[in-house]
Image 1 (cartoon, chains in turn orange, blue):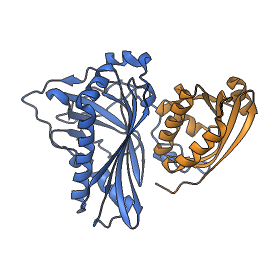
Image 2: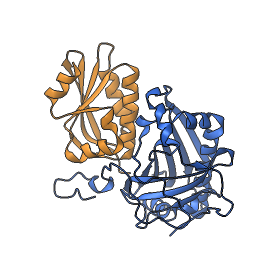
Image 3: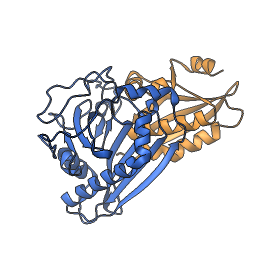
Length: 117
Length: 238
């Protein structure tokens, strides 16, 4: 697998939602970075984590596994996990792996944040 | 897959396309196609506790790059399975979207007819995903990486039992059987590559919660049967 390079930006979207912007690659090697971003985003008051995939450049099956793990953690904390910014290719991967049944995919940040509230 | 072009993501050719139902072209002799029309199921669609199991083998002495190990693994995949289990690879080899049929030994002398779809494949890894009717819901990723000039081969399972019966089976020895299966597979791979190895196993319960809403998956679990004397599946390759 290629070396992974990812940067994750965490920002408050208000109303108990937090956005995690993903820039670069999501692979199994992204685990520490993603879980660190989740820890920064997922305080007690946060009811929803919104993943921004508009700058996602690469994802392999290890990365999808990581998103499953993240979803389990969010569910355990009774937080919704939502996503936006997925291009057609990554939407298809969510459909293939059936992650789209558990992570609601939205067309835009505004839609995702509205659904998070 | 056909998602290519100047603006396509780098991984575009590595993923299978979504499918509503599996369809197998040409069933090899000795295999039973019980996956026809079935849906794929990921770890989110299963019933039991979610597990991540990682089996690693450092291939000391093999002097092969990760891509070479994966090439060998893909090409000879059925040969590395433990005795008494048959993997019928797709005619075109292990490539995204292809389906392989499986005849496997499970606990209690039963045999299992099922299959898997190649969900993802690149030069240094590939992933197989299970369909409805398989005891497990999830996927297995096979990969190779190099550290300190030694390549390590890895099989990593992310799965839940698909239904309550399979969950019971896992707790009554199924977990151990699965561990031995992949440990033996990695040992066989290492031996094929001329390497000495000890397989390390790491098991993590990702989610202790059982998904009772998925208990109805049991209606798909019709793939178990008693052995037929006339048929004795062996390692198979085409």
